Amino acid sequence: MKRLGIGIDFGTTNSAAAVFDGKTVTLIPLEREQLEQSAMQNVQLDNDVAIMPSATYIDRNLQSKTGQSAIAQYIADNTGRTVELIPEVVAEVSQFVEHGEGAENNEVDTSTEKIYGAPVTDSGLQGRLFRGTKRLLGDSRVRRLLVFDHPFRLVALITPLLLRMREALEAQAGRITAAHLGHPVNFEGKDPYKNQLALSRLGEAYKYAGVKEQHFYPEPIAAAASYLHNNPGVAGDVLLTVDFGGGTLDLCVLKRRGESFDVVTTHGIGLGGDHIDQLLFRKLLFPLLGEGELWRRPGFDRELIETRFPFEDFADLLLNWAVTYTLNQNRYTTPVMECIEQGGPGRRKFERLREVIKHNLSYMLFARIKAFKAALSSQPSARLDIPEIDVDVTLTRAEFEALIAQPLQQIKESVEVTLRQAQLAPQEIDIVLRTGGSSLIPAVRSLLEARFGDKVVDHDPFTSVATGLAIASYHGLQP
Image (cartoon, rainbow, N blue to C red):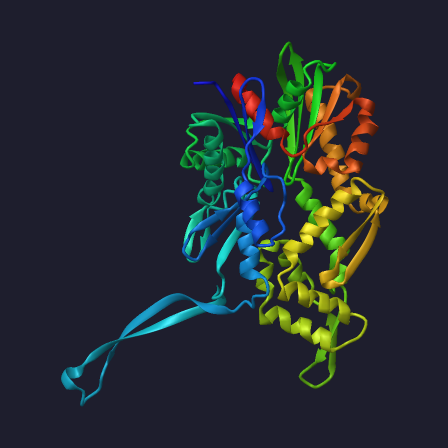
């Protein structure tokens, strides 16, 4: 049987898988069938079949969908749906009740009283969507998540995704016995043992998905392995990788040793493109949806009460689009309608907020923000055009860079930490490898070029980790 290297990159936002036969790297088409189905249903999704969203959707029958299908089902089930929360039964109390004189044989009945808690059960919810679950793997406080009263371990929520990737790999390459599996240098969270816990959970999930022989491999090292394989004649022996993806920023320094390399140091923080998307949502859309506006309503003594609209109650639910549908209930919609009825200069903003809530538009808004961000990577200005809520914002690249000044500073600091750990000066670095989807932001390249000059090169931003893992698997490389 022909020897193959197998690489699986389970990412925070997206996932990919690849095989390497010693000569050619082949990316596995994870989304071909789902994209064909979505086209028939007129659902607009990403068009790269090798990249699968790291999403799991579980319905009331506890059946699961993954990837693009999970997102499409979530959108279909929740667009325009009014959330109806009912009180949840938290306990039942039983007591004996003896009938008084005149009752036959002094009958004794059991009286059962149900004790209700706060209204937290969404009676119309068709399914739960989980995306970004990788962020929780290193948090010891998160053990189980309730899905329709059934406790699901984190391992159970990501196993369907890993199983789908394994099955897609086997359809292309035959039975899999071993694989190199990517992981960030540092998982997100503050738990002191987050990395050990996260890798333990990932290992268990891969085992359930049928990947028995597991070789965990840091993602920035995999990206570097991919680059060196594709560029065997490149000059320079010391390479710094800056892998800026959807959920984490990962860095490493390698020193080439013949056809192989030694890992000098690694570093990583919880910063990614998803954080920048949320920042843009806050800065550009929140003020257009009612943030900072006044809420006027009658008081008990018929005097007018004027306060700031409690936008903070809406913010987190708007930013986490998988649960935005929960805003479609009276406790949120009533104050929005009152603000619309009061008129004034803020009325149009609250009408937009009502539309976002009523039609569950947060996922669409984030999709437009991602496209807007991508446009700013290739042109000096771009329009964030959202006709569904009558928003048309033009931003220059300079204005965009001013908005993301803090994340850029975090990247700069992480580069300096990596250099200190490696005990190397910038001039001792021969190649600076820029990879990961978020590395396409021009300000990231400018930041690196300011420090390293013309040593900065780009490499395969979305699939370099998966291809590098397959190459490392073939050669039996260890971190």
